[in-house]
Amino acid sequence: METEIPALLRAREMVAPERFTFHSSRMRMKHVTKEELAAMDAASDRCALELSDAKVDVLGYACLVAIMSMGHGYHAVSAERLQGVTRDNDAAAPVVTSAGALVEGLKAMGAKKIAIVAPYMKPLTEMVVDYIRNEGFEVVDYRALEIQDNLAVAAHDPMNLPAIVAGMNTAEADVIVLSACVQMPSLPAVSVVEAQSGKPVLTAAIATTWSMLKALDLDTRVPGGGTLLSGAY
Image (cartoon, rainbow, N blue to C red; front, side, top):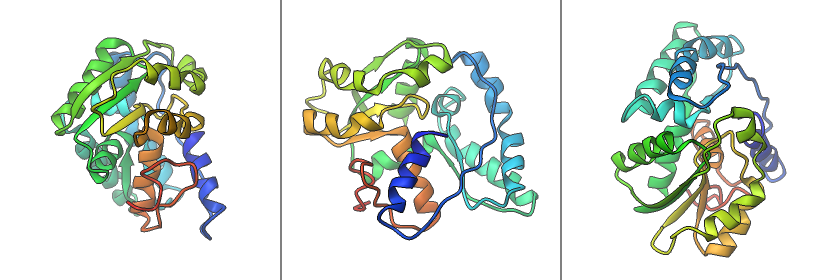
């Protein structure tokens, strides 16, 4: 949340007049396990309250797997509850979750079949795949990188991703989800994988940026943001 989303919005500042400030409040999590994710999600109300003190214009909840591990459709439940927290603090603001943004971004792109790369352990990755399938998509292939340490996820080299995707079955995929995690860096590899595969590429960070811009009623063209941030959606 604190790296690629600001990078995308800074890139947008090169082609559009709006300027952005970034504010963050953290939910604690060291290891990406179901137990720590549940504890992390429980802290989201506190974070929304703290950020609404700053009267921000939009809030983004950036842990995709924390949302998806809480059960089918939870992205809508979470966003509505957290928006209520801002409203009760007299600082009403729209709330975007990376989980909901990924789902909505895929729908906007008209995707039916997708391939997914995720950093999580295999059981959590399968939970993410199941959540996405429940939203009406067919997952034709996926890779779980099985990185449990949260800081190791952030340190993963994005330029490993093109070779990972090259080893996947993406022939029938409408869209490749290059990183189903805002924490795992992927931006430098987006254009490479789009060129290599001939497919549109989406990431959790790109989808979240798109949803935040839409919530702000701003143009969604961001250089280097892949197909969804081309301005066409």
